Amino acid sequence: DMSEKPKAGATAATKSAAAETYEIKAQITPDPPKSGVNVLLISVHDVKSRKPATGLKLKVSVSMTTMDMGTEEPPVSEVSPGDYQVKVAFSMKGGWSVKVSLPGGEAKVFNFDAGAH
Image (cartoon, rainbow, N blue to C red):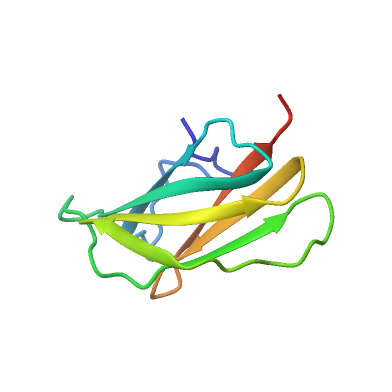
């Protein structure tokens, strides 16, 4: 399960007025990822309707967590309704963060450890 644990001080039960519009999940292939090119499948659902969120312009930022290797923004393509695919290149072993930004300001960060296996 790739979902992030709530940060300290944030409880999952608390829904603020700015409740999430979208539920974002991500699955990487291979899992665990390797150093090199991996395929990330991002599935986005509308929280209220439970339907796939189609036609979104997603922005994906890939950066290393341990050192500044710059930030890549690879192109994202919708491969089926609500499913978006992006090739993420982890140029070396170590911790990587993939930030998925949605229209309207919502974002979710997925952390991966590349090549350490």
